[in-house]
Image 1 (cartoon, rainbow, N blue to C red):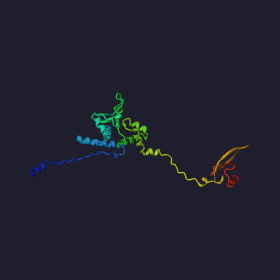
Image 2 (image 1 turned 90 degrees about the vertical axis):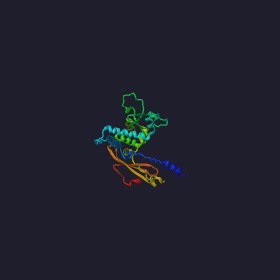
Image 3 (image 1 turned 90 degrees about the horizontal axis):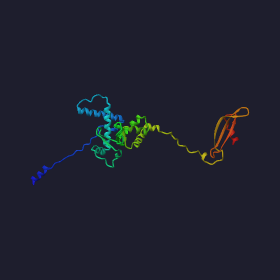
Image 4 (image 1 turned 60 degrees about the vertical axis):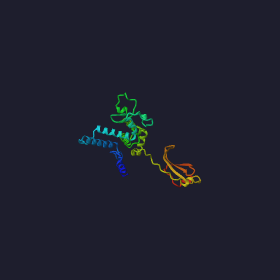
Length: 271
């Protein structure tokens, strides 16, 4: 019995699996602008290339090619995070399911840049490839919001239609018009420009305006003039007193010839 137990103990093996989660090198939430994200990604890609080749990183100035590669790298990351299933199927030359959100865009996979491009009817035109087939970007991503804000500021806070038109020159944003309006609503400069005039709350009416009383018990007085009235020989300067009852809104007026105002002693004579 002891020998059999020892053999069973020898055959027992314990296997431990450790799950390692790879966090992104650059956190988009720590960058306020789209250009800063591109520059940060460019330095990271330059450092990785220098580490693989064993050479120095070179000058601190960023070239146009490096910035373009960093921009495409961000586009690739967005597609892999949001449309991961579609990205893997298109990469393996597999058709998309009917439930795919980007199926109606007739997407195609670019093997050179490893990106999903929107199809169209301009395949036989002389336009550049970036114009014929625009890069598909999903709505709702944090980096996409920074792209929209960057274009909006470059256009000096233009409206949704102008921002969408410029974005469509390079990318195809799903639910683009709705997404742009949602992001432009967060722009503080545009919010300050859209602020309307302040409205003051009206005070309650006084008791003289809402209580029954004889006519001209409580009145309001206004003046008009000076007026020049034509007479027989020459024009005469005159002023008009306008009386309004506060409760019944009955009105009356009295002219004053040759004087600008009238004294309070004239009011009983008028009434």
